[in-house]
Amino acid sequence: MSEKIEQIIKMIEELTVVELNELVKALEEKFNVSPMQFAFSAPQAPSQTQETQTSSLVDVILVDSGANKINVIKVLREINPNLSLKDAKDMVDNVPQKVASQVEKVKAEELKKKFEQAGAKVEIK
Image 1: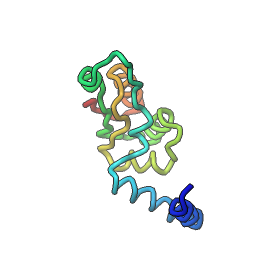
Image 2: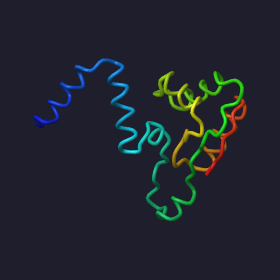
Image 3: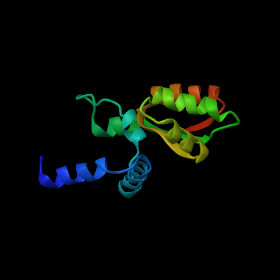
Image 4: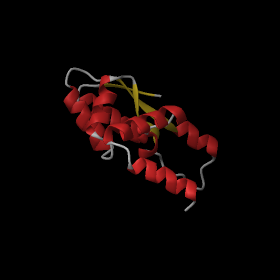
């Protein structure tokens, strides 16, 4: 491991939980990424062309969390167990939010149904 990487790791080890949370949020904003982007990426089949694959993959966007936000938070954490309670709450409180990125249409419909049962409104794009 390079010395530069070791220094970065040492600096991160010295951060408080609050500072670490701020760092994660800043990196997400800086590089325009989120943990959800990688949670639902569909496997690539070698026989599919890139064009066919792109057209069959969609994003699932939470547009309204509804009256019972707790149920929506439960669904978010069910579909992504690595999502912290705070991050799930933040997503529910700050709609619209992409809850799944580049998933197959069938999986997107299943997710939409789960969110609707929890009282939320979801768009598939």
